[in-house]
View 1 (cartoon, one colour):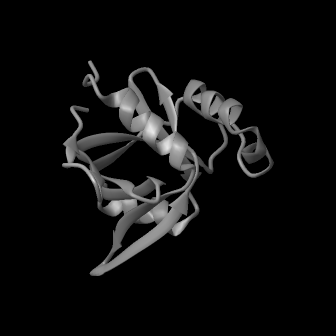
View 2: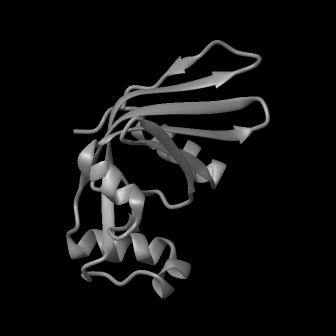
Amino acid sequence: MAGKDLSKLYDFLKKAGTYYLATEDGDTPRVRPFGSALLYEDKIYILTAKEKDVSKQIEKNPKFEISAMDTPARWIRVSGELKQDNRIEVHNAILEEYPHLKSMYTAGDDNTNTLYLLVDRAVIYSFTEEPVVLEV
């Protein structure tokens, strides 16, 4: 069962549009922009390709951090682990939500990689208000 604030986290990421996912490559941090987020079966999913370095990094170390801003004065930091779930139903759902990605990804192929966030901590920060810890 998802925490009571899962939809708040999802809404924040959707409003931000672009969020930045940090992973580890050996002893070096790697950060890249992402734009896909799907709330499906009480989990937030993201999409990438298995052939990309980010997938290989997550396979070696599933810990992540995400940062995003939804206004110039408000941002979120999310940390936890990414778990792979490559059921065709998940592929189809995220590709329906982001049809422009269908030119790069195909549901059920050997390259499409859908992962869900297993969140340890999610906090919304602001320049004008106290931090809000989400119960995800």
